[in-house]
Length: 541
Image (tube, rainbow, N blue to C red; front, top):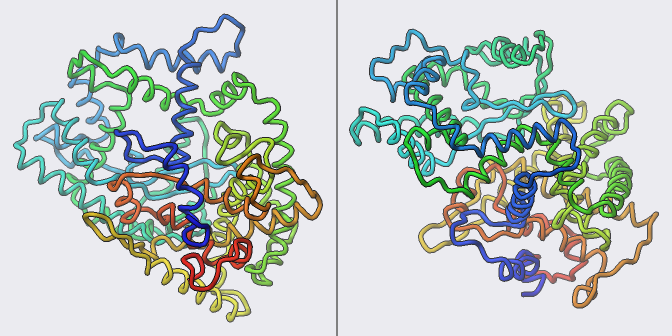
């Protein structure tokens, strides 16, 4: 395959042949393969009893993992215990036919099923709508409810699950818009998003850790439309369906702790599945300790030294690239160049370049290799996130800027990009898939401009650092600019099965991986010149 015929296949075809998808995997990519490797390494490390001195944090992390693995001592849970748990949050009608809505108030439940929050590195919150894959949700909830021996016929159960899936789809329809972000106080949220006591919800969250908040606390709303509709959506929904929805999601969360296995007296527990589940639970609770232990356990001192040097160089290059960017309006450049707003970008870049388990390994970072690969790999990811942050901050100001022509021109470009992606059609054996250009617009903008920004940062870096490291053997035929784009594409190599691809086309706010490579590079004059793609070729249509 030649680069100009299909750059995704040119860069990823060899990877797919070398690393075929495991027979039981629906999702398989460079990223999932790396996660599996890290998981296996960490499980082995967590399972090994060390005699050397370790910190208290590491000891507690290992104790947490070991207690999760101790299935013999988890066999005391009963169905009554679960029913009591559900009763404490207003009940689970599917388990209790005598359930009454009088004791149910979803706002006291703090349901992650309807919203999620993140305390981010810059002390903002990110709130996003989350969904489950409906087919998997249906099968999983039926399987778990069967263990609890609910008193419902198959027909009744299917009807209830249909209600839950329909409600889930309604929430999803409300969450389609992505570039509709605002920074608001809790008091402003109370006025903007009627029908929900936001202060009560966030107070409960922070009271659990002994922290008091006020109504001036700033919240970054990452999907304004979703939350504007949420109050009416919940008000129009009957309480039984809401309680079942929250109960079903909580039941699936409980199952991560293998409690349902003990209730059903499962004799043969899949040890590998248990180890993986316990590791992920441990990683979620002790993320920083896991990172520290991995970096300490593996001989990565030289890689870390190189990575830390690289991230400082990249930070400086990105700051200059932001100032020189052509896609920012004069109004936006003034905003970005001010001392106050410049500091807004610094933590983004530093945070994304923390030496985490994945960040210091291929396909994100290649030690002792041409730096073009790293700017193309982790650099484009940083570029993507910076573009998101810029438009999240500026999109709601466009209507107020003095030069309305700038805003109109930008909207025209957005419409053009939306139409370009909406025309993409992919045929499979059983179905024809189309990208939703509106739903994926935010991610597509960030992909296209993120590649431009990362390449600009790379050029700035190379102006001051003429480093001529080359790859060995056949790869040595590529120029440094070509390696940049190869590094970019390699991040997105995958070999998903059709069911996962279907989920990407139907629900993901990002375009499928191959088009995250193909379309931004079709739109990149630099790429077309670098690989000499003639007009009329696939990459230069």
